[in-house]
Length: 187
Image (cartoon, rainbow, N blue to C red; front, top):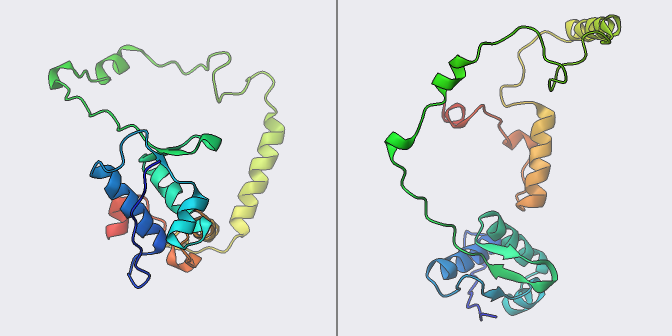
């Protein structure tokens, strides 16, 4: 087990979790911690640093998310093997899937046992029509207005709750904004 030299600055703008993540990540990047090296347990490192076990656990989970370390259950936590370097590919060896795509004509008739397509001969069309009509009536009775531009309120609440548990970020749903992609977040 490697002896970790981590110095925490409680006055720094970074959280203790981020400081631990950066220190271990830097040690791995600089080669002080080699692939396969066993890391201290949450308890041992929390005692060494004078922080709560949950703080070390959160840091380890972030390092696992970044694929820098791996947990092997009761055996402990270890520095992960480095990911293999991406091999350069020859552009001429890449083949576009579009020519093959157009060689197969589409048929309008569904195939038997096709995923997502119900059996046409036993499908309850009357029940389906009644349910669809009820859903359409409910939608018609809903107030007519634009949706919240920040995103669905329930989804924003769930994301805020997840961030509190998974990342230790305390934020209100009003601080979460859902976009359709990075370009939507820039505008």
